[in-house]
Length: 365
Image (tube, rainbow, N blue to C red):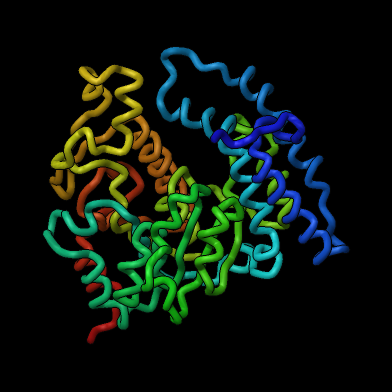
């Protein structure tokens, strides 16, 4: 039986049951925070009005890249999900902490960012990078930030000071739906987007700092300001993925040296092409017979490891390299690629094998 939809909502074609839950959350918020009531209808109407405007301003040419199409798709289809998630999370957001409290808190320290790329286990030195970090963690005086994808293995090894989450999809809950997370009683703190799915937010019981991921004005005008004003949260550029967000958070907190681990921004050449995350996009764009033309193969000039990439990963990688170079030139921080694989290389970044980095930055045992 099809879910009943109605045109009687501010955002058209929302399931009636979803709208009912949304209205209940609004009433609950206004009852608990009478001095900070919000007019949710106005907020949703503003975002609803963006759809035709963005569609008319961002009409895609056939030659536009997958990353441009992804941006427009985000604007037109994900904004309702984000706002629904924010409304569902508003009570927790108000009771918890804001990212602004972490500004400069680790000034001058070293940070290690643990991404979820395949080079965590398949890398130039043929070592398990999580186990290697666990070996040195007690002698490391900096901070370790982990992305949601590697939360469970990091908790099992007792590594990580901060967890970061930016994706609003319910699929992220899979990284929290385990006994390791449910039974965790350690000190790791969460840095979580206000638009994260409520199941994920509810699954994380520890102290949480909320933030709004910045949305470029050319993608969705004024959306960042609206979401910041509504939730009274600070915004930060997430760079399009959780790994780059974690890196930017380390810089935000004042770290001067940042090592990135497990941040491939590429696929392994040994992974079957039809198992690649972006493969369906290339099949749709080029057809199954030519989908392979959407990928190119390269070799890391320092680690000598091969990788496979496409325009989406290349866009993320190019954006990251601009940031690494700019932050180094202005003296904010120096980035060390310790992934031992992947596609990140170029001006503005240093390279070190992870063990070498740990040996040089940890107290002697």
